[in-house]
Length: 155
Figure 1 (cartoon, helix red, strand yellow):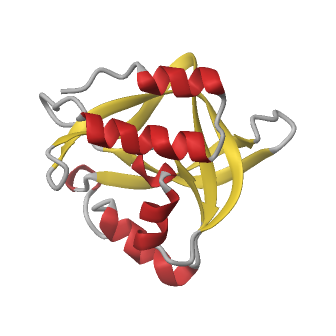
Figure 2: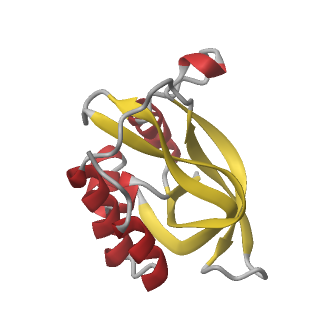
């Protein structure tokens, strides 16, 4: 499965802990979406990342190739069960087009986990935000995008 990582899974160590088969394929751009924090991560004790439609905005991330044997591990890590009703999952796995290396001539349809919003979500904490930033820097995502991540307000 090709998976677009945009939040804490940008941290390759975390992604490989969840899915040992994860292999980096490419940087990627998700156009007309923005990063948001619409739900509370119980284990993290703070707001956790998702994406939502937003004309003219964009989210940078990376595409990993995850072997079929590990897909259920990522599903579990994201609290997604394909047999549960959509609203009972924390995240739902959907297919979405991204632009590999941000190139409009290199579209690719990938899986992405999008959060089911909760009422009154918390802000992300500094540790969680810094995990996202660390991954973005490690993959050398665009400097202006990293600056946007650095500007995220934390609790």
